[in-house]
Length: 418
Image (cartoon, rainbow, N blue to C red):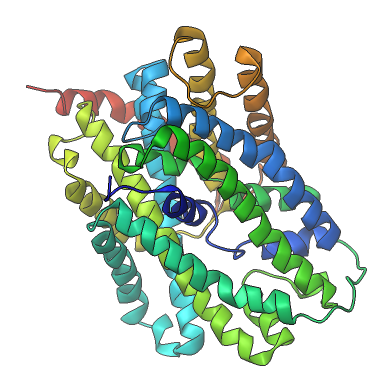
C-alpha cells in the first residue's frame, strides 16, 4: 500500500490530466466576455464534468481494474467495442501529446529565443517526453507525489495575481465571438476525467478514493479557471485583451515582475500534463496485452511506457496543431461508449457491487449520461466547419475511428495466445 496513490496524489494527477491550470481558457473570455465566460464555467461542470465524474466514480469503484475505461467497455460490450474504446483514446493522445511539448518550446522561447530554432525546437520536445517516460518508470506514486509539487508551483503565481489585482470593476464591452465557440473551449478544458481510471490497481482503496477524487477534482478545476478570470476582470482589463497565451501579458499588467513566474508555470503545466497523461495512457496497452489484443511484451509497464513515448515522439514530426473539435470528437466517441457501458452494466449486472452508485437506478444512469452526450452532438454540429489544413476535423476523426474497425481483426489474429 505504501507505493500506491492516495487521495491527494490522485486528485493532483487528475487535475493535470484534465486541466493543468487556466492555460487554454483565455479564448473563452475573448469569445464570450467576462459574464458569458463565468456563466459557461459554472454551467459546464454541472452538465459535462460532474456527470462524467459521477460515471467514473461508479465504474472505477465497481471495477477497479488496470486499464480503467477500456476494461469497463470490454466488460459491458465485449472485446470489439473495448478495442475501439482503447483505439479512440490512444488516437486522441497523439494529438494532445504532440501539442503539449510545442507549447513548452514556445514558452521557453520567450525567455531563451534559440529554443524555437533547430536543433533545439526538435530536441526539447523529445527531452520533455523522454523525461516524463523516465519519471513514470519510478511508478504511479512518484507521478502522483510529483503532481502535488508541480500543482503548488503552478498555482503560486496565480494566487499572487488574485491577491495583487486592483479592484476597478469589470468593464463592459461587446462579445467578440459566438457562444458555441466558447462552449467548445470550455468542454475541451473540462475533459479527461476518465483518464484517472486506468491506474486503479495502483490506488489505495479505489472504491472510496475514486468518488472523492472526482468531486474534489471537478471543484478544483472549476475554481482554478473562474477565480483568476474574475481577478483580471475586476482589475478593469477589457475582454478584448484576452487571446491564446495572454496570461503572461495579463500578469505583467498587474505587476511587471509577475510575467516571468507565469511564463515559467506554463512549462510546469506542460510537464505535469505530459507526466500524468503518460501514466494514464500507458496502462491501456498493458490491459489490451492481457486480453491478447496487443503484443504480450506490453504487459510490462516499462515496455508500454517506451511504446507510447516512441509514438508521441514520432508524432512530433507531423506538426499537428491542437484542434479542439478534433480532440472533442475522438474523446467524445470514447466517452459515449463509457456511458453506454454504465447503462448496460446496470441492466446486465445489477448485482455488481457498487460502493458508489449514481442515484435513481437505471433512469438515474440514463439521466446522467444524457447531458454530456447531447453536448457532444451539439458541439460537433455547431462547429462542423472546423478544419485541420484543408481537411474537415469531423471527416478526419471519422477516418481515424474507421481505422480502428479495420485494425481490430488484425490485432486479434496477430496477438492471439498460442
